Image 1 (cartoon, rainbow, N blue to C red):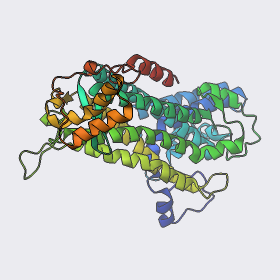
Image 2: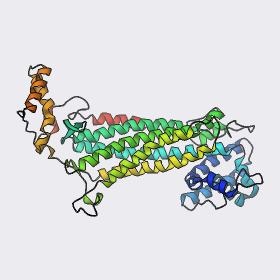
Image 3: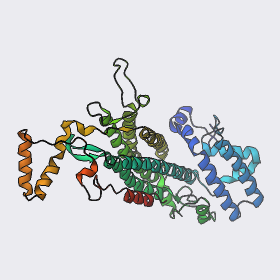
Image 4: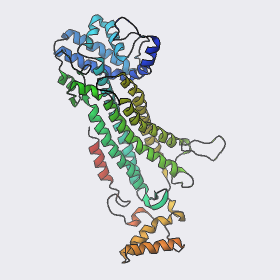
Length: 435
């Protein structure tokens, strides 16, 4: 295999196979980013006199042509080419001769790879943001639509207090606000420019790092060259942590849906086409989508731990271990995209049970309402609590909840079933998503 670092010898095939692993396949995801970074780099090289204007224009046009190949899905790594960077440089050299080799001036593969990763991850985070906003909007729409429909709230998996579908859907919408804050923090880490840091110690070319920062629309350069290279691993960990937070929210929602779909509860329903059956039990309607989502989200949450383990025990500077991070992070980004899109798709077809409280089983969730009623009538709270508890234990406490709606309970404080605060939550999301 042809390598950029070859000095006249080739690695044994077994070593090559072991060290490259899946990297060539994963590198294809970086093709567009590599070209974007290279175009900014050669523009800067022209600006400092390392490329003539004619050379820059020829290289830029050739890179634009390769970018079209990537966009059309026709870009490939040839069998004897080491990685994405080698393939693009080879294509330029074939087209432009020795001029194509000038693209690497003032750049190490270390800062080239890190720049590619940052550009790629920036696009991924922006896409995740849009998917989160769509899901957020769906959840808030459902929250308002079903705000009057009461739903049992649970603690310790025991019937606890009155909740509502409005409160339940709205809770997950607001949880996404916190997740968006974490995603924004990861974006800030990602959106700093390492290009020009070379192998971690700069170089003697008079590089204009501010120029490439502007060209690539980064917030700022990573100023110190060593710090820039220390961003490898730290960048992936920031992203892994952010997507893990989103996955935790989706995991909990998926678990709720699995439980609420159970016929013993029957709180929600989905069309038969969105559930699966059993090979032996004809009555089964299994929540496979939500179960797989729950499992996928556990995989996504494990990404941060695996990333941290891969990044530990290394002094500063580049180490080949970092290559393995793509194998950990890239599949989990795809999993998160799938989970966000599927959650939104499923919620477009959700049906809620408006008759839950017709079942007397759920009457006890109103004991707190009765305690509060007696307290407001003058009975000390502890005495009211004891009275209701005794009546429940002796089977003398009765409450007819059938037909009740959320507004009948007069819960008025912010964030309660009678005051969802939807507009407030929307404002929080709008602010969190500004990046």
